[in-house]
Image (tube, rainbow, N blue to C red; front, side, top):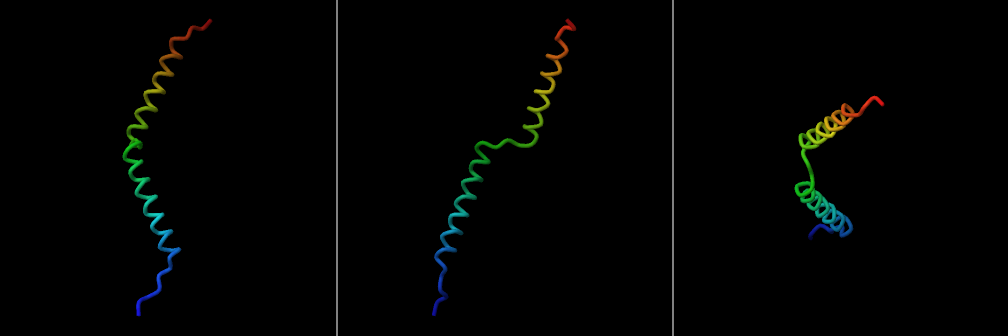
Length: 58
């Protein structure tokens, strides 16, 4: 005789794997690496420093 299958557990496991797959796709599509984020942050900091350096003391 076969083991009974818990349909709620099966449904939730399937939903969990589908959600994980969708999250992985979005991470590839929209995500940025840590190096890219650090580079953008460094560029923004430099632009802010350059702008502050051009302000007058008036």
